[in-house]
Image (cartoon, rainbow, N blue to C red; front, side):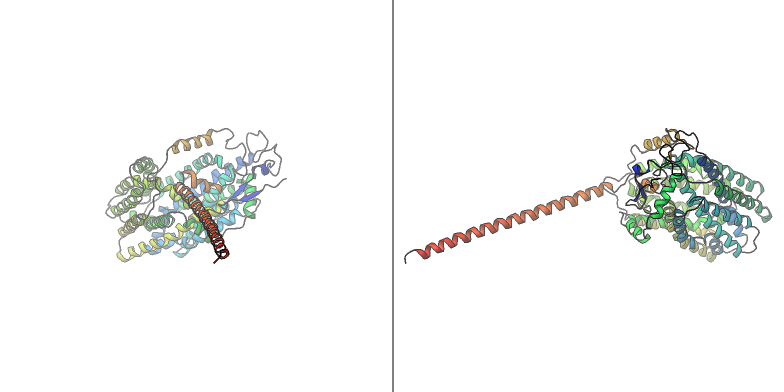
Length: 558
C-alpha cells in the first residue's frame, strides 16, 4: 500500500494530498474499493452500520446521566449537607482537575492506537465509570464518599463527550455528520424521557427511599451501553490515515497557540467578556436548583417540567426575535445592551415568588441572548483553538471555562452561608452582566461591519443541510469516506469561516497599505539615489570646468 502523504497546515491540522490517497482502500486495498466501502458499488458498509448502532445506543449513557446529574443529584447532595459552600464543592470539585485533564486526555485520545480505534476505548471507559458511580450514589454513606463519586462521574462524562463528538465525523465523514448526529440523537432523547418519566412518577421529595430508582436506572443504562460501544463503534478506515498523521505531528506548545489567538483583533476583550459571562452563569448553576426547591418550593418534578417548557420553546421564540434585534441594532449596541439585559433578568429573579415567574423571565431574556450570539458569533469563532486533533481541540475549548467558573461559584456559595438566603445568588450574574457590558465598551467594530453580514447565509446553510440529507453519495451507511472527509479537526478551521471573517477586509486593506508604503518607500529610495547620482555628476562637471578654466588662466601670458 502506498502510504498517503500528510502535511501540517498553518493551523496545525493535517492536510492530505488527494493524489497520494487515490489508491487507498479499506485496510489498504486498491482504488477499486473506495475507502469506507466494501466494494465499489456496495450499498451498506457493515462496519459503519455497526458503529451507527453502537453510537445510537451509546448516546443513551450521557442522556441517562444528564437526566439525574442536575436536579436529582443536587437535591441528593443537599439532603446530606446544609452548607451552600459544601454543596457547591461537591458539584464543582471536578473543575479543579478538569481544566488540565480535558486537553491532556483529548490529546491522548488523538494519539491512541488500539484494536478498538482511537475513540471507543475512552467512550466505553467513561460510560463504565459514570454507570458504576451513579449506581452507587445512594449506596455510599456520608458526604466525602459522595463527592468522590461525583468528581469521577463528571470528569468521565466530559471525556466521553469529547470523544463522542470527535468520532461521528471520523466514522461517517464530515459530509454526513449532521444526518448522523440527528439520527443518533433520537434514541438518546427517548431514553432520557423514560428516566425523567420515572422520576416524575416515583420521586417523592421528602422520602429519600424513593430516590434510588432513578439513579439505579441511569447507572444500569450506562454500564450496559459501555459494553455495546466498545464492541461496535469503530472509525472509518480512512480515519486511520488521519490518526497516523496526527501521531507523526509534533505537538505545538499551548503557550504559542494562546499567544497566536490573543493576537486576533478584539481577542482580549471577547475572552474577558465571555469568561465573566460564564462565571456569572456558573455562580447560580447548581445553587439555583436549591433556590427553586427551598425558596420557590419547586421540587424535582416541577423543575423537570419547567426545564422542558424553557427548552425548545424558548429557542423557537428567542432565535427569530434575536435575529430581528441583530438587524435593528448595531453590533456594538447589542454587545453592550445584551449583558445589561441579562443582568436585569438575573436581578429580577431575586424577587420571584413562584416558578412560573422564572419561566417567564427565560422567555423575556431569550431574544437579547440570541441577538448577542448572532451579532458576535463571527468574531468569537476567530478565537477557536488552532492546532491538534479533534480530541485535543475540544479539550482546549472546554478547559478555560471549567477553570474560570470556580471562583464565582464558591463566592456565591460563601455569600449564601454568610447571609442565610439563597436569593443572593442572583446578585452575581447581575454584577457579571454589568461587568461584561463595561468590558464590551472596548469592543472594536471593523468599518463596514457595524451589523452582521448574513446575506445568503440561510440559503447556503439550507443547501448544505439538504445536500447532506439528500445529496448523491451521501448515504449514511454507504458511499465513500475519504481521509479528508474523516479529518474531524478541520471542522474548527471551517467553523472560523462559516459565518465570515469580519477582520478579513481590514487585513486586506492593511496588507495593501503595507504594500503601498513599501512601494512608496522604494520609490523614494530610488528617487533619492537618482538625485544623488545626478548631483554627483553635476558636481563632477562643475569641477572639470573649473579645472579647465584654471589651466587656461595659467597658460595665458602675464
